[in-house]
Amino acid sequence: MAYKSINHAEHNKSVCDHLIENTEFHDWVITTAFYAAIHFLRHYLFPLEEGGKTFNTFDDYCGSNKIYRNKHSQMRKLVEEHAHHTIASTYNQMLDICWSARYSQYKFSAEIAGLARRRLNHIENNCK
Image 1 (tube, helix red, strand yellow):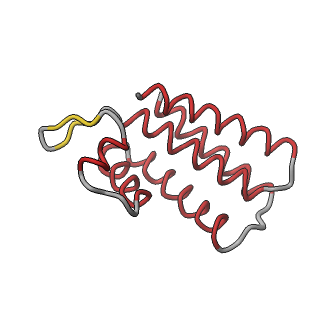
Image 2: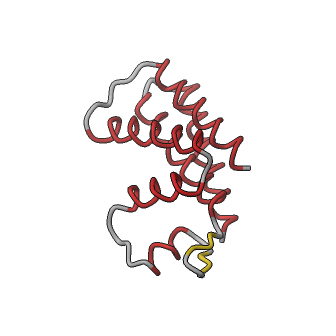
């Protein structure tokens, strides 16, 4: 199942690259960069061994632990616990700006969109 995460990551990264080159919708550049990062991290973190159990995917982990809500909070926790601190810091920055782009502010500069893309590069390079 981990291959699906890497394929999904590559797909979202391609969408992000297309948007950054062809549109002024910087909020969607930020959003697609973040979702690409999530899938690179899922590929990196799973399979995950925790509490004597092996979880093959994030969905397996959530289902087994009865996590049906707040999956973003759970992902943040897993990244902070199991990834290098620079990856966790970058991920948290991406989560925060994506949250703003999706729910409170949609107008962002090309510079902020470019920063989101560079943060994606950092996560991708450290997760492969």
